[in-house]
Image 1 (cartoon, helix red, strand yellow):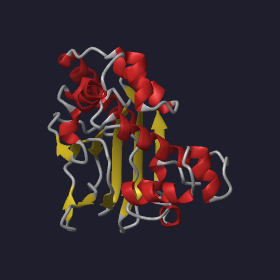
Image 2: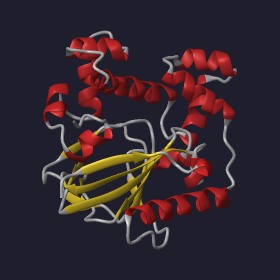
Image 3: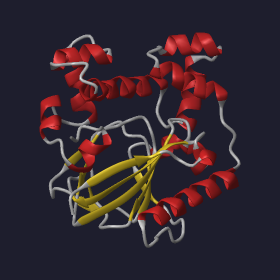
Image 4: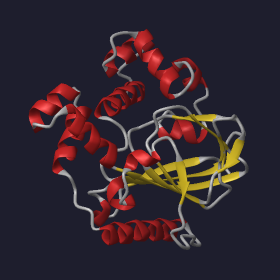
Length: 259
């Protein structure tokens, strides 16, 4: 099956918490793929063969059928092991806490198995409906209210504001802000700002704002190409050119580098 990636807007009742629901299916290359951090947590449901994940020791370990993926701050290597079929619920940056109901820094850089009951269905539409039903029911059961201060800070970070600006605007000390981010977001404000800047590189490539890596770096807010390259090594463990050269399958789809 030719690989297919698609994104769907969430149901209206999930829109405050969920950025999108996505799917990927087909035969992915049976080689390691690097998943780029995007500042968001996800619920992942495999209805095909689960991916293999390379652990800290270098061994390949099969992912569970249903998992919660916390924030990424370091390279994640996945490898397909057969016909893939994945549905992901991508939460807003501050949205996953309402679903999980636990401090999100406990899940940073890890994937944990969940047992939400039977989420299988015969066709794509039914799968999407059933997974969203599950997310909506769990959010309702948790009864977690939004944190307007954190929502404001995330919005300002995405607009390029620094931590000092956030503290000035909210009246919070850096330590207090960091604690609230750890619980609600899973990473510090400074780390989230770095991830947001890193993602702007892909936006520049996708929107043809840049014709060279130096232009992409400047468009994303880096001082120069070497500073951007350091973030590629930090977050993906490779150079920019190496990541784009391998641009296929799930990893490329998630940053919209596919054609």
